[in-house]
Image 1 (cartoon, rainbow, N blue to C red):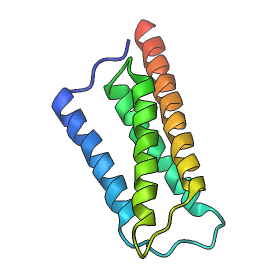
Image 2 (image 1 turned 180 degrees about the horizontal axis):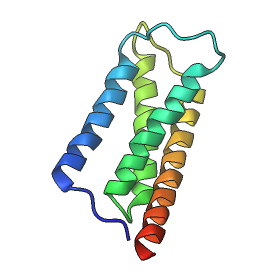
Image 3 (image 1 turned 90 degrees about the vertical axis):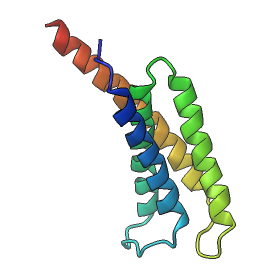
Image 4 (image 1 turned 45 degrees about the vertical axis):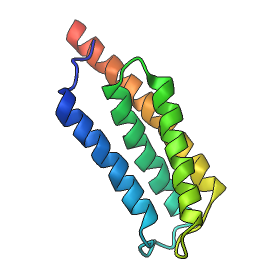
Length: 120
């Protein structure tokens, strides 16, 4: 079994991740590379880190982490639609949800690897 994360620092890091995504998503967009859909990769990775961290912190509550991270992504998209400098995008929501799912998968893999390592 994976050792528990120190509770208070882990919670602070989790809240910092939420704030970083919210601020980064609601500020005017920085110039992006000319790579098509590069913002979708950023969405995927950001939400993978977010949900992976919370999944490790809240073991046994992965469905809530998935729903919470995905709902957060939906909320952010609706808030972006209310700004003059960002836009609402269904594909961003999809990338956020896929990232949340990827984060859970990576957290499960990490937990399994640690479990195997500590058992040997």
